Length: 200
Image 1 (cartoon, rainbow, N blue to C red):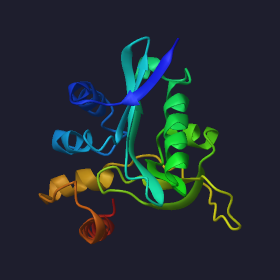
Image 2: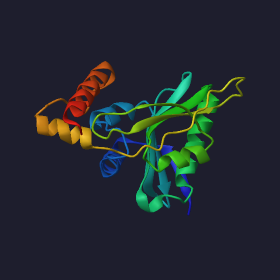
Image 3: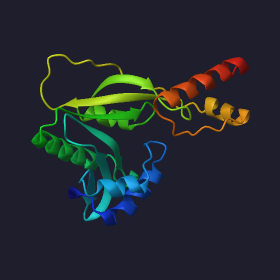
Image 4: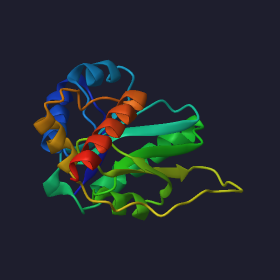
């Protein structure tokens, strides 16, 4: 099968949004307005197999570290090198633009962690994820230039645990699952305290 990688266009966004929704448990969610804004910036790469779309990568700027915000290959095209092809293409773009590394974050229970290891990425940190899934988040990094010191850690394989999230629904707490930063940490701490009090 012939894989072609190209910059996504506006007419590709319905496919990208559909694939994002089909894989919602594995991806961070972005509204269509974000994708529409990023198309003119050429920050979404589309993989095509025999002329049909098969997946995409949404990435950040090439300055310093280039961050992969989303990477997804449709289910029936996985394990056929299409994901590797699009990552290699992005790596070439980053190298030509002078990026220092490519980084991303991946839920600890997602099979994609094995893919990133196979692609030469190293886990450089593990943090707690959102409240709803209660999984860890692995931080992956691929250096584009040799470095003297690399901090590498064992990636987490913690499974999802929705018990805390379900408990908050029972308590009637209405806080957005899309909280980030300090708000999410404070909400998590609150729910953990509630859970300890209820012996969940």
